[in-house]
Length: 317
Image (cartoon, rainbow, N blue to C red):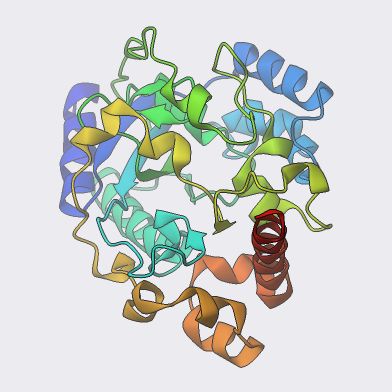
């Protein structure tokens, strides 16, 4: 079977399994991306995420993850939905966190897709990755033609927006490779202007992760620095601001994944219910959810930080 036929078959199967996008790049060392990552780490933009500095060689060379690797299949899985909390004053969590944990949901689909690939092409050595190993998924998606890396440093597709998860299959099968697409951010600075913590550099394309609300509410294990008081915009898990303001997300369409349907209890939660949340309620409400990553103590810390902001504002009034 010709390389192009192999690629066509894989992309067709990916669509059958519900993937929004699928592109393929040659598995090779990422020299340019390695230099950018090194600069980013040297600026300490990773904050307390020390794991970002681990396995540097594996992050930039897929053949160290899958010996003999020839191709990297990048895929996107949609999580966009229109549901919003009924209480406009309630703390906010990122859109992707309303349903079941994407790591498990998407991984199952990737494994099924890989099983079909191996069924068609025989003994293929491969591994699947869903934000779970040292893989520069955004850069591979760019190389695979799924989109461009925007000024908000997220991957943007001109027809689908950016509300999707990225994942990969690295395998030792030679395929037809896709070409990167152009950058269409143009002169737009909406994401830069909207970020309340100034995490995005003035010119875009560079993110100080240690200032990002997603980092502060999920990755940071210590107390949130006081410099971010009144800048959290009511977020307690993740942040969607730079996606909400992006013009390309007018093309985002509702997902059809049952596992990602928002938990109805989250939609009806009031501000007071969040403030009064106990650990048993947390465990029940977020069973099988990505929010479990913060643990109850982390989420409670975030809620208390918002409460302090609210009390200070009202005291000044």
